[in-house]
Length: 418
View (cartoon, rainbow, N blue to C red):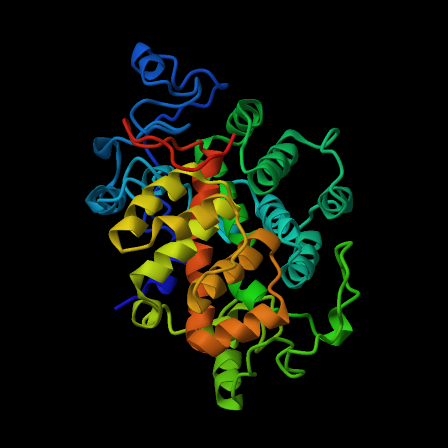
C-alpha cells in the first residue's frame, strides 16, 4: 500500500493521476471579475473573481468533459468528505493540471519550470535546493538577469510577462499569504489556467521542502560558493554529520550503490549529490506509517493548526479547528496557536509540537535545540515524518491561497486575519 508521503508530493508537483491527456474543458482565461459576478456569488459575499460553483478562482471541471483517466481523478476527489480535499478545494483545483511531469513536460518549457523551482527555494532560503536548481536553470537557458531578480528580490518590472507572472504569484503566495486579484488576473491571462496550476503547485512544494529544512541539509563544502543566495551560510553547524552534511545519518554504502545503479538506468538523474537531499530524507522516513501511533490525532491536528496559522490560511485553519476539537484538542491550546501566544503553562509535548512547526513553517529554520528536544520526545523517524506531513499541508495552503479558496457556504471563519 502506498503511504501518504508517496502519494501526496508527486501528485502536488504535477505527477497527478490525471496524466498528460490534455484537459478538454474551456477554462476562463480572462481578467479578474469574471468569476463571481453572478447574482448568487454576490448574495453569498464571494469576491468578484471567485466562481460560485468552486468557491475559488477557477470554475469546477465537468466530469463529462474529461477522458477516462481524468474521470478517475474526478471521482477520487468527489469521494473526499472534507471540503478542503473535495472538488471545492485542492482536489478540484488540481483537476486543471496540465501534465504528468511538470518539470520535464510543461508546455512552458524547462527554463520557466526551473524558474518556478528557484522562486520557491528562494522564499524559504533553501540554499541546497537553490544552488542545485540555479545551475540547472542556467543550463536550460534561463537568463542570469532573471535569476538575479529572484536572488536579490528585485522588482519584476522589465521582465517578460511569463517570468513576471511566475515570480509575482510566488512572492505574494509566500510573503503576503494572499495573491491580489490583479496579480492573479495577469498570471491567468499570461500562463493559462493549466500552466498556472502547475506553476503554483511547483512553487508551493519547493517553498516548503520540510524534510530538507528539518534535517538542515547543507551543501558539500566544495559546493558552498557555487551559486549562493545572499544569506548567511554556516559551513559546519555543530549538529550535522560531516558525511551526509545533514542532521540525518549517512546512508549505508549498499543503499548508495543501489541508488547509483538506479540513476545510471535513467536519463533524468537527480541533481543532489548522491546520499544527500531528498534521497537521504526518504531513506530515514517511514512514510508516516507510525505518526498516529506516536503522536495521536490530537497532536497531529495541533501541528496542522500551527501550520495553517503560520501561513494565514483561513480555509485550512477553520476546517481543521473543527476537526481538532473532535479529537479533544482543548480550546485554550487552540487559542494559544490562534493568537500566537507564548507557550508557558503547556504540556511538554504540546509545547514541543507548536515550537517545532512555528520554526519549520514560519522561519524555515529549525534550531538545534528545538530539533534535539523534538527528537528526544518523539524519536528521529517520527519527528521527520511529522515535518513531512507539514510539507503536505503547507503545499495545500499555498494552492488554496493563490486560488483564493473560500470556506463552504455558511461556515464562519475562525482565524483572525485581515
